Image (cartoon, rainbow, N blue to C red; front, side, top):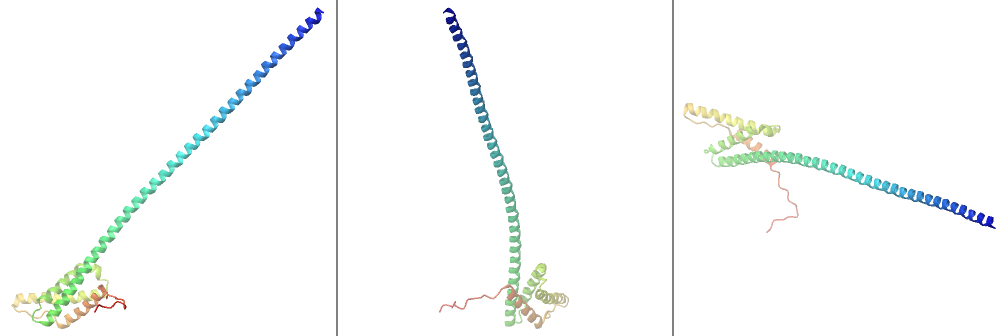
Length: 217
């Protein structure tokens, strides 16, 4: 009977020991699994964190590049604007200069034609006519590089030069003899008048009015 009890106690002890080791093994395995899970979470977190950080860095880099391109474009655009403004001002100056030269020539031609009309009325008073021709000669001489490629201007210049040359010689003759003579012929003035009229028509186009516009009564 005692032997049976001892055997039972021994079996319970062995079973308890086995159960204890099994429980320890379970706890160890559970601990390992928990550690692996935590490590996995840490790894995943670090991975996601790295991805997010890399994405932010990429976005920042792209943003910097875009801003750099925009800055370069704005600088190039501003430089181009400055060059265009300089070119515009240069063309504006040239156009204004040409306008002033054309205006002066037109005024000289109209002054001559007015003086010529006065001379026709009173041939004895040729001073104003000669002065208008001399002024025209001075303007044409000053601006010849603008006009002398046009044949009619070349003819006009030859006309006024011829008359002014005769008047110069007449002044020399007057200084020597004390008497005046006619320094130009009627034909000289007639040709000058014809050529001046042609040029005025070129420089002052005829005003075109629509047929349906009628003057007020």
